[in-house]
Length: 343
Image: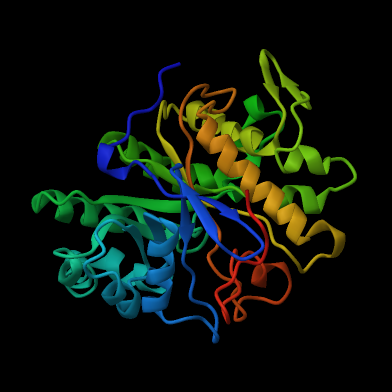
C-alpha cells in the first residue's frame, strides 16, 4: 500500500540516545521525539531542560498545556518544534464559543509564533471516549478555521488511547467500541478531510503487565524476530505493530482510509511493578522502539511506511499517581542524569 501522506512540516526528527557510563551522549537522527511533562515538584527549570534538549540534539517535544515558562524558555530555539496541548478542563468553554477559542489562541499561542516553532495543537488528551469527548470536534474545527484563516502551518488534532478499541486481536479484527464510534469516528473523518494525522498513545507495557502469563516479554519489547501472531498473510513479532495495525483496521471499518497516525506516547516504566519494570527492560523497549522507527520497515499493515513517535517521558514525575506512573522518565529530575543506558 502507499503510505498515508502528511504535511511536510510535521515530519518528526529527533534523537537516538546512546549513554555511556560517564553519562556522555552520542546523538543520531531518528523519527522519535520526547514528551515533556510537568507533574513533579523537583523538576529542573524549563531553561535547564531546553538546554538539555539542545545538548543532546532533541529537535521535537510535546507539552501537555501552553505552559508560559516552557514556551518562554523555547523562545529563539526554532530548531526545536513543539506540540502544545489544550487543557482538558478548558474544552467545555472552548466548545461553546468560537470567541473563546480566538481568545485562547491569542493568549496562549499567538505571543510565541514569532520565535517558538509550534507545529501542532492537540485538543484533549485521551478524553475520547468519555464524558467530555463530544467537546473535542467543535474545538478542533474552530482552531482549524482560525489557523487556516491566518495561513499558519499549525496542525490541529487530538490524542487518543487504545481504550477506543473494543476488539484488537487479531489485528484484522480491530474494531472501535460503540462509544468510540460515536465520538471518535467524526473526528477521524474531519482529520481525513484536513489531511491531518490522528495522534495515538500506544503502550505495550500495559498489555503485557495485564497478562504476563500469555504474552511473552520478548514479544512486548521488540526482542524477538520470531513470528508470534499470524493474521492471514500478516505476521507479527512485536505487540506494538499489532496494536498499531488493530487501530488502522478499526479506522478502515469506519471507511476512514489511509489516515496518518503519529504515536504521541510510548514507553516502559523502569520501576513500580516489581520484576516487570526494571531499568534494563525499560532501556530495551525504548531502545528497540527507536531502532524499529529508524528501520523504516513500518508495520505489516503499513509496510515501509515510516512510524513517527514520541517517547514518554523526559523525567520521572513525582506528582503522578504512585507506582509505575512515576517511573516512565528517561532522566532523574534532581540531577538530570539518565536513569539507564538507552541504545
